[in-house]
Image (tube, rainbow, N blue to C red; front, top):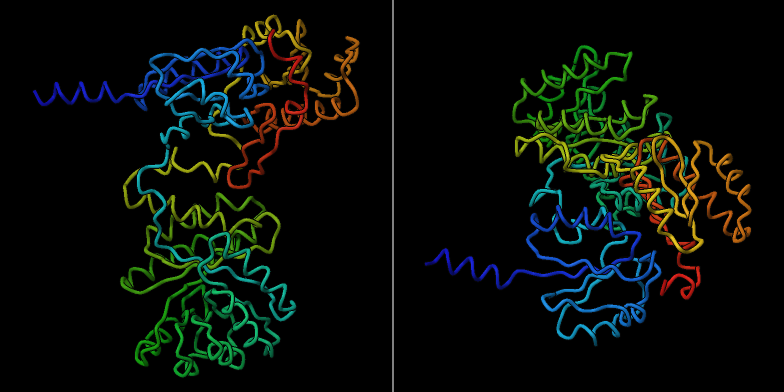
Length: 478
């Protein structure tokens, strides 16, 4: 009896969503909704209105053309539809009205069917973001970088000093960064600048070895113990023992070496140090790899954060000096969540976090030849649709389908047809979109007209340009 009542209750409360679209998007929408409905748990109706481009609908026009499905509990309008939904609300009665996503690929997320597992996002690795060569910067420059680092996920702002020290302005800089509400560390071996820095509020000192460990007793700050000779770890045990005996809180960093200068051996030393000091706090300076290797930093950061997660290294030091590492802080913030999930849950770090997929997309779908030919037959207006398929840019409009791997050649093909609507602004728009399509082809990325290419966490969203500027009357009531 209980299971029967539960089944009846589920049926009665099940959503019936009426999707509103145009002829151009019907095929794609049906494909997405057919697979999504059983996953999310809703019934649906797809209402195809007499317009080719759904993006050109307005609520007033929809209200004149739409017939409400009696079983519908919600009306989902195209994401590009703009304006007050009031006219549709009068028609829909008590039914909820909402706007869908602009990109059909985001429809699952719109319904809360997210790829991220529940609770995803936890982490236990702290990010120290170093501002290099602070003595050479004016205070406003330091504060600007500190704000950016903090916004990108840094937990501690590390003020990097020069070996020529001491830096006379260190105390003022520490206090100014702290006044932003940020935590501060000082990167120096010179007690003459470390002492005023910790007196001003710096909570962590990078670094301490045999040359300055005696002064560390008076600082009242946590310090990072490093070896006198990273290749042999000489002096590290003595420094750790000295600091521990004098109750100076510490972290240990065996020092990561660049590729070609003992990188693999230095990784082994982190393993050895963890075995020797199983309960110690440790840190890894990952900038020695991201800054000194000719490769985009995201993948390197993920791998190094994974090593840290598995070894229980709870602090990383990074920076953004070289151009290919200009987003390292944000990459580390995303990576620490991904590796934490993988290690704690015992699952692969795959199909979980797409923000670090900046160069290539996880999945690419392309229209078929039949789709494009059918589209050319169905289109009644003179607007151009652009697609990327089989290594070529495709341009489709009413009774016309052109394709070429070179956008310049494609534009020549179009001009040869004598188009009547190709003014300067329209030509600029087509050139911009065709170049986006070519970029997508070159990097194996998804291209969708009037949408930004997906660069992961580096994506810059775009506003619609061409479609929203076209006259409504000529596109409707076809």
